[in-house]
Amino acid sequence: MKRYCLIIAALLLTVFAMAQDFNQIDSKGRRQGQWRDFYPNGQLRYEGAFKNDKCKGTFRYYDEQGNLKATNEFDKSGEKALNKTYAPNGRVIATGFYLNQKKDGEWKYYDAQSGQLRLVEDNKEGKVHGWSRIYNPQNGVLAEETQFVEGQPEGKCKKYSDTGSLVMECQYHEGLLEGPTKTYYPSTALKEEGQYTKGKKSGTWKTYNEEGDVIAEETFGEFVY
Image (tube, rainbow, N blue to C red; front, side, top):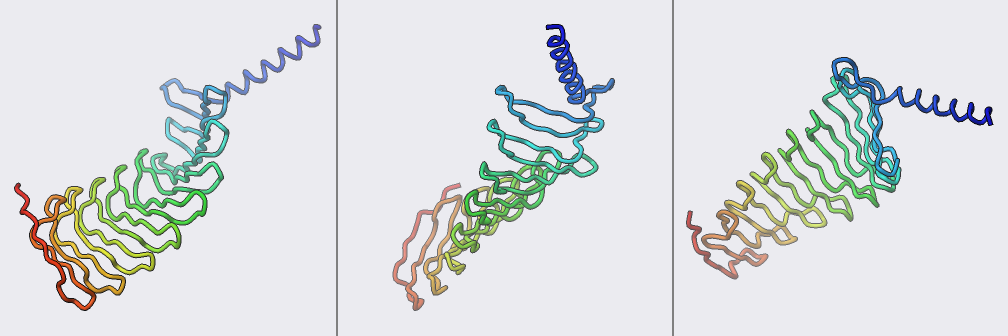
């Protein structure tokens, strides 16, 4: 019995000593060394290292089943990190940089099953800012590209067919369709043209056949500001 108690005591001391190696805070309240956090079920939630309260090296994040969910690889400043986000099957479904915990620069998103590129977005301070490009999930051809400013559509937008031919071009202002819009036949001939004002059709819209003849014309009420 005495020997058994000694073994238990030794194990407890070992666990306690190991615990002292993690989640340390210095006299100035700064996180130092290796840190870990756990879910209520005991599963590891994340692991990584700090130096003077700055993230250092690679942080790994897990779901409650123990699957790797994401990694953040920090630069020397501890402020910028290359992120890779994973699906439960292990495929990378997103990658890009965080700057001060906000998405920054180009981010790419992939289909969890096929690995096919689905979306590429420019970011600034955590918001889509620049071009957003959506790709056809079947063949990877560009399907749509839109300009964004601080998280909402602002500027040019183009949409493409499955084969990559232009089918629509329009413009956005403050998140709403604004200005001239054109649609095209698969042959690239002009199909329809008109104007949007604050997200609604306005003025005269014309529809053409593939030979360029006007086959329909419709006038919409002017938008009242």
